[in-house]
Amino acid sequence: MHEKTGFASAVIVAGGSGSRMGRPKQMLPLAGKPALFHTVRAFLNTPEIAQVVVVTPKENQLILQQEFEGLTYALPGDTRLRSVINGVEKTAAGLPVVAVHDGARPLVKPAFISRCVREAQTHGAAVLAVPVKDTIKVCQDGVIAHTLERNVLWAAQTPQCYRRELLMQALEKYGSEKDATDESQLVEKLGVKVRVVASDYANNKITTPEDLIFAEALMQENVYYRTGFGFDLHRMEPGLRMFLGGVEIPHTKGFLGHSDGDLVLHAVCDAVLGALCEGEIGILFPPTDPSIKGICSVDIARKVLEIVQSRHAQIVHIDATVITQEPKIKPHYEAVRKSLARIFNMDVKNVSFKSKSHEHVGEIGQGLAAMCHAVATLKIKE
Image (cartoon, rainbow, N blue to C red; front, side, top):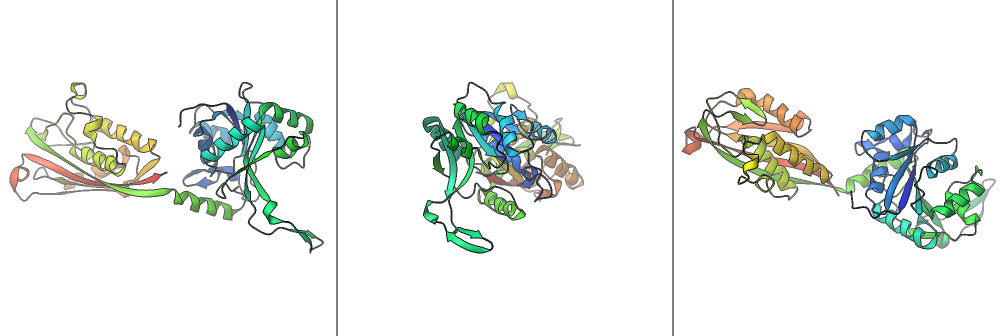
């Protein structure tokens, strides 16, 4: 989340029943999360937004509370306009601008939210909109009456942003009008000129199943994949405990290191950091730091996972190979795979773990050391 310089409240209206989609459209899955989650996150990532009010039924509020902290909630009304009023009533009086947004527009970009909010701060009212691409016909009784001039037509989107006192005045004066499809109609009736802020066509409202497919496709455009490589080597010493991938392996020797010597977790963590171009674990946990002497490598992995999550990334595949002459690792394959999957929040089917001997060559072949190679592939969302 960006540093806040906020002066605006956001009211996200997400109270629809979704009659055309079979269930509430704002809660339909999009890129593995309810669509509303993406909407909320866009506003949380907008520096000008200091408060987010979500107008949605109680059952949706409980779902949101599991993902987000610090949101304000309001219950929906029997009309969209009534839901907007319920949300605006929960906005902080000290914030001079209110942005009203449809919860079913999950692909709105924070940059466009910022522009719209700042235009409203300067001019009183502003809405996101895009030029109409199609030729619009006015029809009567199944016949074209006339054709509208396309170059003056814009399709209104949300957010629609207003100085708080203007919006409150419009809602108080015209809030009982059931035919109003957006708030700008009401503000226009006050004689206020509403500014148009050019948006993009990705900020589409999910209304039909085709809209959801379109949104999924656009989400994929912002995703890329990277693979990183990791390596680690440790000397083996008698009397130490041996850990591989978070699993203790029965043996007379263990790995000598500043931590617990889990060379599988070390190699995998370096592979993950490599995919993110974030260096290696020696930077995060310097071997010269006496305070972390003997640190559990699972804790190192948890720190790496925090970095993954902060980059909006997901580990989608791990492949690790241990090279050691002793002990026999094959009996522990499944235990290590399951442990790696648990530590990195993955499905075990996407984790590969195996071992090779060193054919009695060199220090590894003499049972004096072992090493691990690992690759990790990450899905990263911009």
